[in-house]
Amino acid sequence: RSMFAMECQTVHIGRGERPQHPIQIVNTLRGEHPEMVCRRILIVLEENAEADVIIIDRAASKQRFLTNQVVEVQCGDGSHLNLYEIEETHLLCTRYSSMFMRVGANCSVHYTSLTLFNGHTRNRCDVQLTGEHSEVVLNGCVIADKMQHVDNNTVIDHQVAHCDSRQLYKYVLS
Image 1 (tube, rainbow, N blue to C red):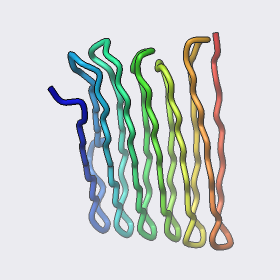
Image 2 (tube, helix red, strand yellow):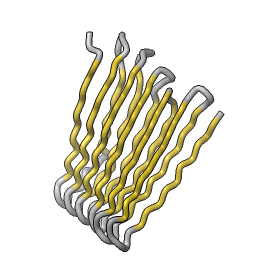
Image 3 (cartoon, rainbow, N blue to C red):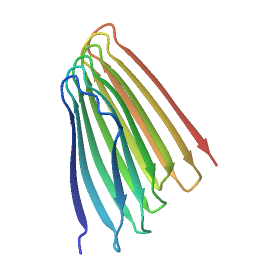
């Protein structure tokens, strides 16, 4: 019986490419015993690439799960990324997610985090705007009650001039 599972996924979009459909990464927690899952997701967009990526976390069984994930995003000059992260687990799940983005010149990254149901969630998003005329938009929505806990923490580092960043996080609490 495994107490520890490790996963690694990579999305690589070549120079000037644009996939016709969104790329979905669906992580389903399932097991007969409590489990810790560590995963790393690497998303690389080369110059002038475009992509829509959706990361979905679900729980299919009522066990205790601890998820620790690291998502690393590297956007080359002129690239455009729409990234969506959706969590729909249950009260026995604990999830720590760390997002690290490096955004080049003339890039646009739109990131949306949705927590629809969970136990304990801690999301962190660190963004480095490394090229001029880059843009990052961080949006989040949480639906939670008194049994759930959700933290969303962001850090945006404007390393060069002429960059734009916006954030909007909303919580619906019961």
